[in-house]
Amino acid sequence: MKTYLSILTNPLLFILFLSPLLLMAGQKTSRKNEIIIEGKTDSAYKVDLVIASKLMDLINKFSTSRSITIKDGRFSFHIPGLQEPTNTRLIFYYSSGKRFVLDNYLAEPGDSVYIQQTKKAAAFFGRSSQNFICQFQISQIKRPSGITDSDKADLYKESEKKVKTIDSCYQLKKAVLDGYEGRLSERMYRLLLTEIYYEKRQSEYTLAKSYLSSSRDSIQKSAVIRYYTDHYLSDQLDTTVSNLKLYSKFYIEYVLTKLELDCITRFLQNPAIRLSRSDIKNAVYHEIVQHRNNLLKQKILTSFFAKKTVITDSVSKQIEETAKKITDPALLEIITIIQRRTKGAKAFEFSLPDSKGKIIRLTDFRGKVVVLDFWYTGCGACPGMASVIKPIAKKKDSNVVFITISIDKDKKTWLESLQSGEYSSDDEINLYTENQGDKSEIIRHYRILGYPMVIVITRLGKIYAVDPLYDFFIMSKMDRISSLEKSIADAMKEE
Image (cartoon, rainbow, N blue to C red):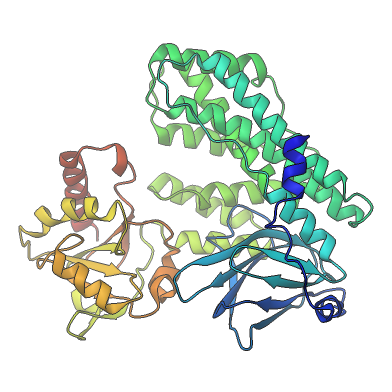
């Protein structure tokens, strides 16, 4: 209880001594099918509102964003035409480069809130303020970290200890939520209760998965399998029809993690079976398609494919099959975006400047294989990718073109990085997304979120592979080079 009290009295929760006018400002009435989010910020120059009508773990990948350049410290967003609860995220930008994020707040059609924000805190006012305050307080209770640093730990006992910590975190969140029962709408209370419960369940399965995927010996893995088998393997997925689960991102994550863990455990229990990661993913896919609730199945499949960085021929066929069965327009749009990254899709026809201002287009290289390397200054893994590409590019194969695309927002920073040779070489064509950064059309088209990212394009301007080095972090440098060279050679054969 001491931890709970410290959370409620955290100075970040509220800004004191606000003008009474703020209390009145939050009373603006919204229509039944819209959400109003207004407020005042201390010195942020811009605020983005990210919205996702489907509460999934896809908000960073497949969502709409509205941006406002702040005047007189005030901002106002009106979100019309809503029929269901909506996940919202506010991102405040400061000239120093720092950001303040109010992350993943669930709002209902008809909600209206006024937010007073500083660099370190936020306060909420207006008719729907209790909803936002409750979620803010819940967000301050952090989930426990993952696996131990000790390779000699007894993983059976450690799993038991970690699960107790996860349950304690859940109980604290539930205590906060219960304190708002009667002050939230009944639906919002039940939605948030569903979220924190499945967050708990998903955390438990993620913990076991993290142990199994870490580099531990067979004895350690056996301990995890034994714990998982003793406690969770007999658990049945909740497949009942419930509208609440349609809005729960953690339920979707829970289903995917449990199915994957079930498959991994079954395979590890049979040493005679040696399966690759793609085999496990295929097994998970076939489990998902057996789900009885059609709407949930559509969401689970969409999330399953959205998490994939590598789209193989077999996965591409699975996505095509899924697209034919999707009836929800929002989910179908996501599947369409995913298909842009599949083998055989038409590559994005970019037009970007090089360091001398010359405009370079993809169409300039028809008849050649094009290798795109996306990076930014300060990216920890990007120099590693550059070290893989440099020796291949140095061979100067006339049939292959290597192009780097930086999302640096500051041109001077980009030019200095080019000069350093850390991220690219003179054997590559180095392009710049100008001041657009990750808002550039090519980045948005491919929905690139992680860097470095490599895309291999065929001589006919079609996608051959997105992120062909998906095991980049566990491959040796020579294996990385060989793998990329093979991908390029295979792309050369494509007609």
